[in-house]
Image (cartoon, rainbow, N blue to C red; front, side, top):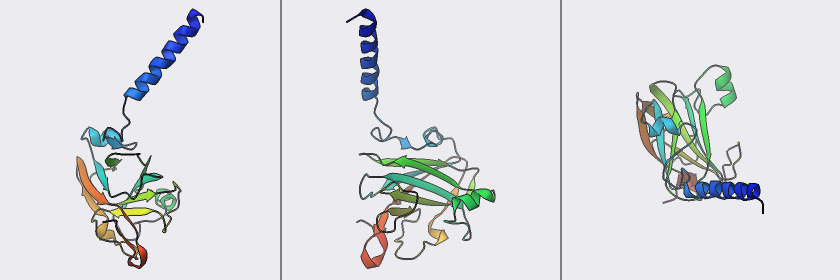
Length: 179
């Protein structure tokens, strides 16, 4: 083996070793998502969500930010954006293990509606039979559309930290926590 080939091989092995030595965000218990720097630095305005009670670690996790009014809560993102209204979504792959913390930045301090989704098949559409959902209030959702009051959060200049319990469809009772 020539000197050039040995150098390339050593470089490749070094890079692979370094990658294995660095834990992923989820393994390290860090904050996940494209807005993670806003929460980990403490510079807001942003919302950090500690996700509790995932059914499994398949698919994707999503945080969605809406205007805090009944007409716009859970409305189509394309419609909200076309009208110049607040809508943000942060999507991450579900981590294999560890605690889950996600971050979503907000445009400015104020009142917003926040929805957490566990898309177990990593699809764009919510699958009523498979997927999980969570709201700030952690009140059992049941079979009806969740009221805006259960999703509303006040965000100041810093980082607002919330714990959200994931709820899944559980028979005739509708959506409720696993415990």
